[in-house]
Length: 494
Image (cartoon, rainbow, N blue to C red; front, side, top):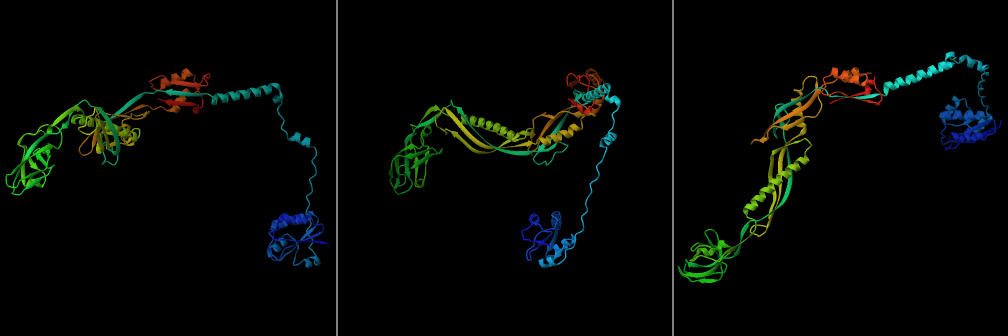
């Protein structure tokens, strides 16, 4: 019998082999596996190829030495041979006949069966009155559902209220670690650096040195040696007013030998006008071999009165600048705090002046004075959370039974905080909070459900002790009855 031999290659797969089978026109098709290359065909692939060969009217056979392929082929009753020659000589096993599915005979009287299965509607439904009745029931059902779910109401109640207030003695210190019920609170420390420059108009008069005082002194020799006194030799009074010699002179050798020389005050001004016999000291080594004195008073030193800053002006301006620095430091500290942190103002302290300069300097005429200071400040403060913890502990014990809080705690100082020498700040804090009578929302709903607006208000006023008439807003506005479903009623307590 004629046989089509197809030699497979390593790159063949199910699709390529199936295409090769389609070209075969013989009653037998023999697939030959290569000896040293493996073709990837699974058991399912062999089953597909076998059915495809059957559809072509041919029988499929294999030539392979791969044991796994031989086992898969034998499980599908596909004949397997050792070589193409043996496949052509040996008899191929006849495949088992395939079972055919016989189609079911067509069913008859389908219309009759359809009529038997269909549920017949009652006659009254087919009538006009029945249809109108069903439509009316549907519309009524929609209206009922709308009446249940669409209306909404907002109820605002103002029940009986009480203001709860307590006075708390507070002690704050850096040494405390936590808040305690006896009023102890841990203080925190903050540091800031601030600077201020301020100018001040000056109207004061100051004396500015104008001319230098002049005179003469006598040097007396204490030794037998001749001494040269150079120009510029400094002599002073007991009050350390200094003069300098104007000429170079020679003091003759011998005890009590005297020489006169002109002198001039080192610094200008009236301070150089000194009395006679007040210049008594010589600066430098010359003072060991001679003495000095002024037989007459010096004169000619003069001051000029001009507008300028005196010591009082400088002191006043410095105090003003330090006050502004303190205020600026307080503002800077508050900017770094949380909203309700509490600054202990009396603990604000100037720790160090980093820079301080007056302009102009002393003894200079000017109608204005400017002071620039940069300094470090420190202070202590209390955390808002710690204050909240302490006030909550005190107020919670004072809230009446069946009352609840409705707003935040307010607190204010009763006295000025005072910090003692041990660093403990003491003050009294008054804490207050509004409370209202507790309202059961479910009870409110049970009282007003299904009532009209006026009856609902009357029921609420009769049952609860209210400060004001209850406010009820129904949506939509044309709806007159309160909702019947609890989640459609919003109760707000003020």
